[in-house]
Length: 392
Ligand SMILES: *Cc1c(COP(=O)(O)O)cnc(C)c1O
Figure 1 (cartoon, rainbow, N blue to C red):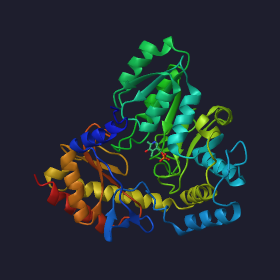
Figure 2: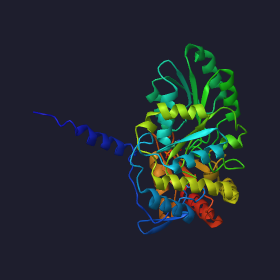
Figure 3: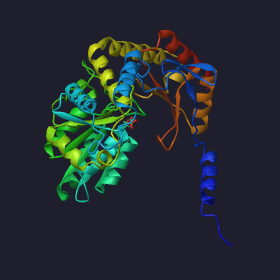
Figure 4: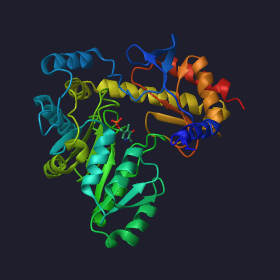
């Protein structure tokens, strides 16, 4: 008698269902925006990373079409073989100019940027110190690198200092990893203190600006700009796929760092270059970030308005709000079952939010993201929906 070697998969799926951890996809029709259609139903969209509304912007779309006409649909090869196009370099220069770094390198996604950069920068003889709430791509990059990985409690500068004092000297190189804007909580890292510690203990510091770029700072350069750390010798990674409305990731820093990554980052060397359409869309989005600060201003007006509505709402809503300094606002809910029910209830009321559960986060929460293209009435509808669903 032979056993089915794949039988465990269905067993595992049953366990996922029992824990209310099961996830599935839903089809969104038409262009992305503040209002989207799912199954013929119109929904106000509070679940998008498209903070500036650029993923559906006609100019960004036109740039992608034009690049496709000019260069075709695929890059057709690795950047080091046949996949390198003039717009790749143009995009890298535009990112470096936005970040005020010497250079930048574009990866096929932010996830790949983190895997490639971290595993190139440290290895078995080295130490990684990582915020407990860091994004999965930072955590997986750390594992891939083979370095010793120690986590410090979320945002805990004293905890980080303790680890540095205790362990730094036992290792060759040390790399500190942190999100600047924490994607599932919406708070910011204490960046200037982390930068100082890094300098004191001779560590490299890689910051993940996925939710910062285009959103924070007078110029939209990110939370590094907003927190006054521009030019402090950081390695800044980020994505083209959130406020910039395209697809792709990047690492910005010194010319030597970028040159090194072109020679050592496996997730850049052994994969196909970013498609012409994605590259041109990212480039056009950065031009819009530079030219239209009013989009950023509108986003922050909306954040302020929604936060005020939430704080002033009934106690059963207001008391659940997690501290946030970003367009990501989260409401804590007791368990996975409740968060799913609230998400479904809001959907029935025409509102789309993120219902985030373990293992993505330690505790279940409704996750709301604000866009520059939301209207006041959208925010009001959301808060009304939350008030009627979170009565108890
Ligand atoms: C989305 C995200 C990434 C990954 O970026 P992609 O371009 O979508 O792969 C990395 N880090 C953080 C914090 C993110 O939120």
